[in-house]
Image (cartoon, rainbow, N blue to C red):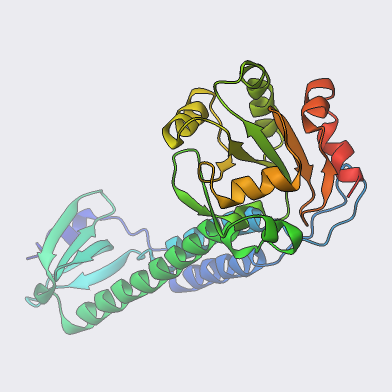
Length: 298
């Protein structure tokens, strides 16, 4: 139960209803402004694009929702009245399991059953809690959408015809081929038992990591077993994708590009058109300019 002397020890810090409303309006306008898309300007290669930076937008939207949620759900300093008639000015901090946590301006926290407050205060608290739940649910929904942004792009054209629907990541977990959408792709034919491969692979790993936003590798293994394939990827820190060991797709690619020796790096456009079969030479001889050279050929 609230003590009568609490009221005299607390300093009033209420912002006032008008000031609170203005603050909410300001934050609401900021929130709405965050939803506007901004086109990416021409890139360094001089090609104008109309696509949007989805990842940046989604991160910005999540931040705005967080700010919006904070403003909308934060309880202002107000006067609470107990069923016995005593009152206290405090801020609502938590409400769960019909238990209320209030915090005075002096920093003291009070925990009491919801039933100890007058009906008007009980309604205020339940409405506040429901508002919190709605905003948190919306924030989580947007967060999930941001996580799934990459999967919304669909691999199209000839590249989709070359690959199965699911590939493997460096841990052997199935992932959608759609992760390659919009990227220049290198089919890397290699194996751990091959000395020239072990010499070239670290250079390719660095090249891929430096250009991972626009370029990705699909490893086509000639290792002796699936375990040897995954061990090779782990040992050399390959963070790219691969095909099941000597599966139908891997054999089809080797046949299509006439691969007779390894290492071999075949570069294809986002639409699956062959750019060069000498990717190894390009990466070794011109690591800083190879990707730009390939993209000019698209």
